Amino acid sequence: MPGLDSKAERRLRPGWKTPQVLVVGGGPVGLSLAIELGLRRIPVTLLEARDGAVHVPKMSQLTVRTVEFCRRWGLEQQVIAAGWPKTHPMDFLHVTSLTGCEIYRRKTPSYAEQPHFPYSPTTDYHCPQIFFDPVLQRFAASLESVSLAYLTEFESFERTDEGVVVQARDTGSGERLTIAARFLVGCDGGPSTVRRALGIGLSGEGRLDFSLSIFFRSPELGAIHDKGWARFYKLIDGLGHWGDLVAIDGKELWRLTILTGLEPGRRFAAADAEQYISRAAGRRVPYEILSILPWERMELVAESYREGPVFIAGDAAHQNSPTGGLGMNTGVADAVDLAWKLAAVLEGWGAETLLASYEIERRPVALTNVAECSRLFHEAIAIPALPEVEEAGPAGEAARRRVAQALRGTESISQNIRLGYCYERSPIICSDGTPPVDLTRRDFVPSARPGTRAPHAWIADGRSTLDLFGEGFTLVVLGPAEQEVSPLVAAAQARRMPLRPERIARADLAELYGARLVLVRPDGHVAWRGQELPRDPGALLDVARGAARQGAAPADIAIPG
View 1 (cartoon, rainbow, N blue to C red):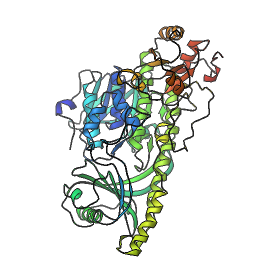
View 2 (cartoon, helix red, strand yellow; view 1 turned 180 degrees about the vertical axis):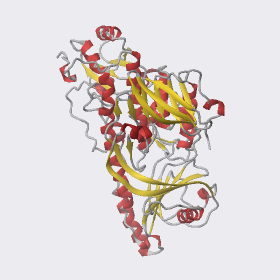
View 3 (cartoon, rainbow, N blue to C red; view 1 turned 135 degrees about the vertical axis):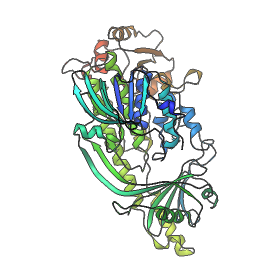
């Protein structure tokens, strides 16, 4: 399976014991956090108990927002090259088995045939974790201020006046390591040692069911049937919707997930895998088992995301059914939100409220996302179980039509959920009084309402507006060329706050963004917008950097007109 290119990449850089941020957990979320900090030249060390090799593709789909982050990191083309074949269709195909009857097909064209979304410079992408993690690992290892400490297990920490002191262990030699840092972030998955050390509880529905994932290789499986390539084969027989078969690489790698009905604590052997694979195929087929992994399907969100200098992100903070593909993608957005805030405090221009805003912004997103994934799972297993569905003849055809009708009534997770969320109650967002985003709508309507992701539009040289955001704050100037913005620039310089004006002479963009001036944060979310600068530009910046005066609120900022 793909992993780091060499053992040399797993070695620690000189000076790695004096990071400013320690990240625990080397999955996509921890790596994304290390990358975001590393691009800002913040010394960061990532601790991972394993060797960094990825053997099981627990995640397979990158949402459009995650691919936008990859674009900003310069990794978009690597992700596209590593993933799904460009000419394969992306269908969701509901079948009794691969060699059985087709029930219902949700058609999605291949990447070669489909245009990008009109609201993004990129698209969702099928890039399973066995391909995605190595892309992130190589890039993180290339950043001078990032050290990847594989085979190094986090054990405990203590708070100090300067931050934290962490105890870790080299899993090869057994050597104990003591590492001091200003901040500690637990990206160490659902069992999270960091979260448990903080005593943070979890709330939610809890365990939804027991599931089983079988990762296997079979070049023959894609050729034994007449239904063509699809990304997902949803398996529905006389007992109902019992499994999902995912084509990992569009060639020979597959992941079969048994959705429900398994006994807690049961051990599974090769004979069980053979039974399930044959059931999915509708006949025996040659295969090689790569992994058999039983797991619990959960719906949980941490009651808090932070205690002092210690934070949690990703699965450590929220766990959801993988149905819908939001788990890892929500975690990557956590990392992007948190990284610029940690960097701002370490660089001296960010203040305490900036750190407090992380939980305020990201926890409501997690609550929405885990609930959506649970809804999708419950819909999947509620598909009617009709014994006749596998039969030939009129009775079988009638049963399949009934199941297909039920499937037409189900809904996938909308792009509005994936992209339309707004940081409504954030103390570092300056509300403009416009109506909140309605996430119950299926269609995504781009908006620059403060708290939302700044909209995409193509500008000169083939760039997107999203390509303007990332390093510091960006003041998008969409008004007349003579519009004066120097007071805001001067106020930012006085606060050592990175801010760059970007003038774009486009009336259509002013209409899309809803204002002539739009202040966009490093994570691409809108902090403020208006037709003119506020009377006190410094007060606006103090809100955006978490340093507003005691008792002040974003609404207190006076905007002329």
